[in-house]
Image (tube, rainbow, N blue to C red):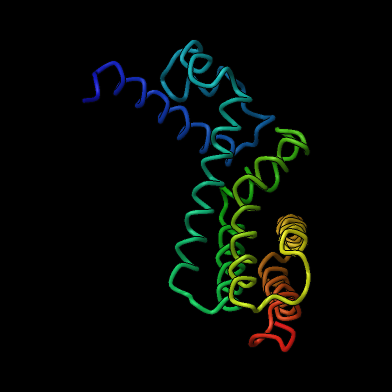
Length: 202
């Protein structure tokens, strides 16, 4: 049974996460101070350091929560789809939908590489979305629908393409047009690697 102390700690952590999500989305990581975070949350600086070891830790926690939510949404979108190629198509569409949302776009795609550093950003992003891409590729492999390329290499190629395209969409003045073009391009890439049916060599 959860104690009052544990419930208070959980509520404090949740308040800080929600406050960080809002301020980082609205103002950007660099423009938000630790003092502003705790003042807006109605908490003490000690609470911020106890739960997240400061502003950088809070940003990383907000980042990871958005990545987990994105992964869950994409998995839910592809779960009912049996055909491996259609699963990949649906996964791409769901991912691009997530990228269009303000919090994910600002925190994960725009601020993440700067606030976390490119290496840490890539490590966390691959931890969540990289594994999902590999699962989709392995499903095509298990169904005998993947052309003769190493599954891990295919997964890395698609992950890299999706990463670059998602960042490109955030940088353009016409994100909707860029999203449509990106979706069409990735569909062509998928169609070139995942076959219509079991290949003759299978």
